[in-house]
Image (cartoon, rainbow, N blue to C red; front, side):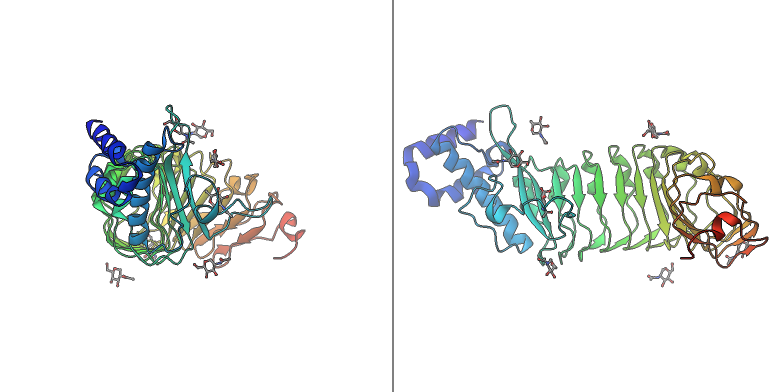
Length: 376
Ligand SMILES: *[C@@H]1O[C@H](CO)[C@@H](O)[C@H](O)[C@H]1NC(C)=O
Ligand SMILES: *[C@@H]1O[C@H](CO)[C@@H](O)[C@H](O)[C@H]1NC(C)=O
Ligand SMILES: *[C@@H]1O[C@H](CO)[C@@H](O)[C@H](O)[C@H]1NC(C)=O
Ligand SMILES: *[C@@H]1O[C@H](CO)[C@@H](O)[C@H](O)[C@H]1NC(C)=O
Ligand SMILES: *[C@@H]1O[C@H](CO)[C@@H](O)[C@H](O)[C@H]1NC(C)=O
Ligand SMILES: *[C@@H]1O[C@H](CO)[C@@H](O)[C@H](O)[C@H]1NC(C)=O
Ligand SMILES: *[C@@H]1O[C@H](CO)[C@@H](O)[C@H](O)[C@H]1NC(C)=O
């Protein structure tokens, strides 16, 4: 705070003429976090110019690192308008993939506004993830998917209090850094569809608030770190299309909140772990292309809300349990390319829209409830 006071007295002495000096003050004061946050609306114009100038300076640096060229720095980024905001789509139209929005939280006790979100999706950005983000310490949400960003996640970000970090569909590479585990506020982390390689760092086990972890479609290798058993709030885990080794670890009992689990063509080997049976809240389960040891059909009896079930090419033998046909929410069922035997129950859920049972050893007749439907 002493430095704020120093800044302010500097500002008061020189008034509006110091705009050029401002950049220097910002650069110096950026070292202290409280001084670089934007402050809108202004308590007085001098304070406004100081903080506005510092925020603009931070955003200038962020833009340069990202390769963002069309922000208009003469406009207030918190006004929900102009170059800082892609307005919501009309009713019944889904959110746009291309979005360029900065959001602010104007509910701070003293009436200030702080930038709390940056959404730049489908913007053809070809820079890097900006180190300068640390100059916006109230930032909580970063959505930068569908760009051409290169490099890795900056070490500086370890100090941020991010809750949502989505940097999927870029060209980010190198190992997933262990210091990501320091952002313990994270609830949603998606690194999907990048060029990340190496093993999953066990430090991610420190992200105890994490609810969604999405690592699909990278070049990840090695075994699954058992430290991730500590992520007891996990609701969604997707690790498909990687090059992991070893067996799927039998640690599902730690993830009782899990609703969505996807392990397709991950490199992991079977069998399907027995602890899967404790995941009563699963609504979507997709496992495919498991080499190695076979399994019996896993126990899914308690997953009454199952909506989408795929166990494709998992070397599963034996009968399909009857309860599968009675899941009332089931929309898509794919059990193809296994060694399943026996017949299909005589009664079933006619709501199921897609059913794939090809390449098994099923016998018996095709029941009425299936026959009565469109063949799709
Ligand atoms: C901008 O939009 C957000 C969310 O809709 C709202 O909370 C905020 O008050 C708006 N800010 C201004 C300056 O209109
Ligand atoms: C762009 O993102 C902002 C912030 O999430 C959102 O309020 C807005 O509705 C989005 N616009 C479109 C067209 O999806
Ligand atoms: C805005 O900031 C205030 C003060 O930190 C906080 O209580 C509130 O939850 C924040 N609002 C949002 C939408 O993040
Ligand atoms: C959205 O972005 C993509 C890629 O960045 C671009 O090819 C496309 O033309 C954009 N679409 C719109 C509607 O702006
Ligand atoms: C995956 O790893 C195996 C060895 O562990 C290697 O032979 C194979 O080429 C790798 N595949 C890819 C796509 O990197
Ligand atoms: C499952 O979901 C329900 C309702 O959403 C929730 O109360 C419960 O804690 C969740 N976990 C388990 C293990 O049932
Ligand atoms: C399937 O599992 C059986 C029994 O564990 C094993 O002998 C066989 O090699 C497996 N098949 C494949 C294709 O991995």
